[in-house]
Image 1 (cartoon, helix red, strand yellow):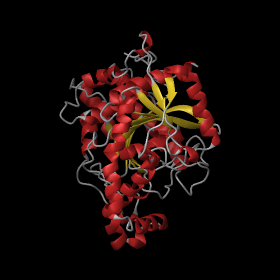
Image 2: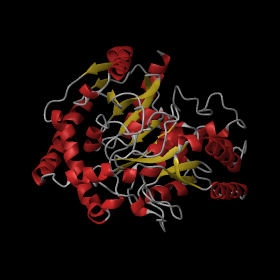
Image 3: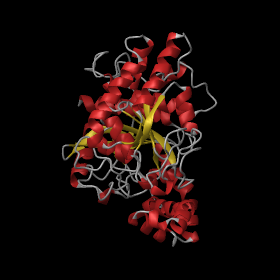
Length: 458
């Protein structure tokens, strides 16, 4: 168990029967197991919070409180009958509305898919249900997980964007509607909303969580990820999702979710961080730059400034070329057959994307592993790369979801990324982004645990 996380209470200041919706998933599942409260009581508090705040935050595309309570009742009956309980038993989870859940509308934020109701669950939802989770509903996405802003508002400041495209998932977790939610990322759609809303976000290694049953727009970039309000919860839900060959009912997943936090504090070893400005640095505002410079100063000798050689300088353009070509392939039929149902922003993007040259796409694909090997060599000497999660605070107004320029480069490389709510600017949250090697989420969580403890104590 991790230093810095009192794993019998992940939610300081919240008692067992007070504001259950504010509990961490870890505390909630243990409270239910120990019969301090029921899944129905937890669900009732979550529903009350949603009904109070949804008119302002607008995080949900589909929410049926009667169905949610019926599922909670089933969970409680299962426990009363002495049946085996999963690591997320009785815990409500939000699902981004590009990921299918059987019997719930799956409209992808677009009138093209109006009244669409999937007849089967996505693989990710199947895994969550096996783990005992209750699907609370479908969270709002931008139009087909692309650039056109959604109706969702940032719960920290309703005049600001929650980011996109996983707008509702990040906002619902930040505003205590649910402790956990699924999002997706093709550019920066998990990490940026996590940064803007002040929650923990994980974009895992590409392909680690099955994309079966998800709206696909880029087969080399699209990644399902997760939101939570602390690292332990993030690890637990990720562990429930990543390996379909394991028994998602196993209580060992709950234990493994906490074991990913190595006890750095009791050893002489301190992780080493490589700070990369990245080619996106000129786009960051002065407040964001000052915030991360302060963190670097606090880390002292644990963090060193580094640079990656070419072709790293071209990585933003490479991501753009891959995204444009693949998005044009998957969404081209919508442009050809349903142009009038697309927003002007998406229609214009798809028109431009059609002009992407095959030579540009191939060059970008060929450069991917070359650049990854440069990053991999750097991470042989460091435990994680540290950089900004966004260019600044969530933008005021709703013309844009903000820039993904600090995220798309890592999505292009297929590497795991975490956004930690450790920075502030303009009196708003700003994420500190950690990046690791492909497939090494465990080490990324270990270093994240250490840096959270260090920066919160400083």
